[in-house]
Image 1 (cartoon, rainbow, N blue to C red):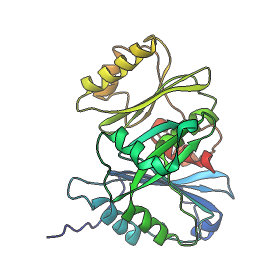
Image 2 (image 1 turned 90 degrees about the horizontal axis):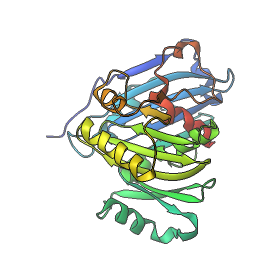
Image 3 (image 1 turned 180 degrees about the horizontal axis):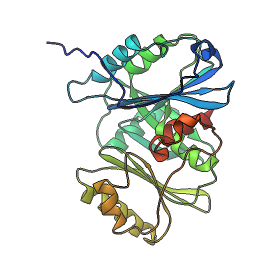
Length: 292
């Protein structure tokens, strides 16, 4: 029997009651989607502020198509998300698999082979492969998104060009734009950690690791730092799904002595309703604004 989804509510939200849907044509819609998360924010260009944020959990273990089914339900229930007259729409994808290839070696017709090699298996034929160029560093990020999902977003917004970008691209661009591109940066998901290292404003290392326990996660971090010859008292910036009272933070703080939680992107302004926002948690969503 096919599972149905109803009465979906955000797990976290911030709503500025001054937001007027009549101003949608003057607003950027920033969307971030992964297998188990859907979140979006609204940047109002008339006021030049972020005014709205909603974050949803997707219970993807129920079945493989749960993401798309949940998205459809959210859009059906939502008062303005499906509007087709946004000023621009940015879709960021936290892909199951990605890889970075130096620009000089990249061949577009080999993109699937690169991704298969990085994944250690054949990527599903249900995925559509995209690339995103980090021109500042001379590398190309190759990533995939399910064909049905990207097709649905394009159907939802036929009046706007939908070109997915990787969440990794938003993160790196945000770090660079905020002039913070030195040192170690850790991006946390529920069961993944992405480790990025900049030296002399150049990208030296970027990889994503899956973990089951906090101890596994700490091992990955310390192993990479050891391989890169980094000291545990260097500044380390945290992004994403981590809090100062979580087990993963407690475990890491026993080894890392100079932890800093990321702040909101410096070139964006926020409504006063966002004053208590855990800024590091939504950094990738907000920094996708830099990709315009």
